[in-house]
Amino acid sequence: KSHIGRLLVTGPAGSDLYLDGFGAGRLPLEGIPMNEGEHVVRVEKSGMKTWSTTVNITGGKTTEVRALFEVDKSVSDTP
Image 1 (cartoon, rainbow, N blue to C red):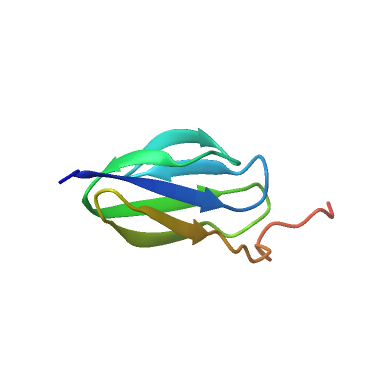
Image 2 (cartoon, one colour):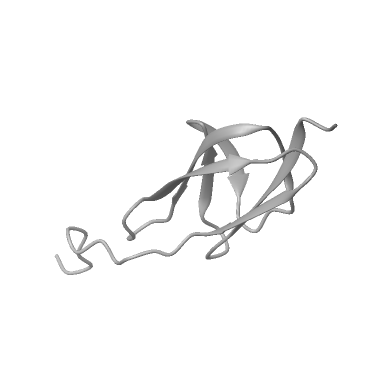
């Protein structure tokens, strides 16, 4: 039995992806190999509130999560 699953994170292109606190690249990314178990997924994009969730990876399967952002109203374009 495989103890490695895959994680597919979808969201706005160019968003920064962090897995368990470590930078993992920019979206879009294909299925990322991950060890079984719980992992923290965080996605950041300029001008948006940070999005995060916990996923449970199952060996041999692909888990998909979609980052849904809200505009960060504390960041303003006006001087």
